[in-house]
Length: 365
Image (cartoon, rainbow, N blue to C red; front, side):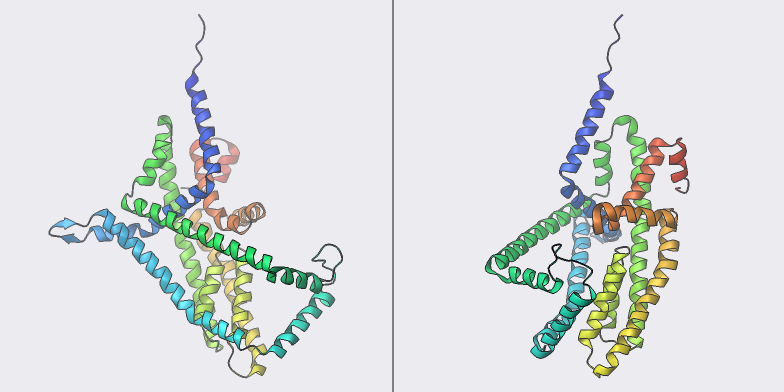
């Protein structure tokens, strides 16, 4: 009797491969959807609270709750922009009031630093002086063609940003409106024998990532508070805004704290309205504030809060972030922990029993 070939597993494998290719091909749209899912996690409590409101003994529709949640998040975003508006306008005024002689002196010192202190680093790659190379780059940028390409690129970026924001908000509305929508999508693309495990993966991932994003909020709050208080004590203007910038930049592992400190010290320099002779001491104290805040973050926030919230060893987190940074840059460093958490949960659900997988996921609950 001839054995019949079971085509069902083969068809399932081919379908899964096609799904992976489609996800990679439309990875930007998938990224928008994941961002919308995160927003739905954040705004879901607002939707549930709105549904408790009754008008004529009828609860508000979930669509109204979703609209309220999105409106609150958008309003908070605009309020944050308005909060930084005075600081930006002050920086613009400082640039307009810059003395040309001082600017030339500053440019001369920068040129000397590039050519004499950084002479071992060849920026051009062909032996051209560093200052001459940068000057050529600036001149090419301010040419008509360069300005045209600059504005063309800016317009393209603005268009892409508008599409991204609209797509994310559009999808987030429906994820907020229907709390089970994401689960239904995952169920629809999961084979029937795997439904139970997929639901477990979704529930556990939602739980751990909610804890992780809560940890990010705590991290930003701690850094903002420490830097703001420290800068306020030493008499820095706009201490809270500089502290908030430091907290937000600190979300980028390793690189973010240095960028936040650099921008913060630059703002301290440009907004200093007192005696110029006191500026070096102010910058020194400001640098000490950033260093102390970073020590608290390195030895308390990251090892204690993040390691406990995603149930991973601090060394694991360090290695994962480093590898992700080398593969995908800053975006990879930001997304490293959420993706690694998802990977560990999937590995435990589908491949438990292997020694390496069991060791890697033994702390997951």
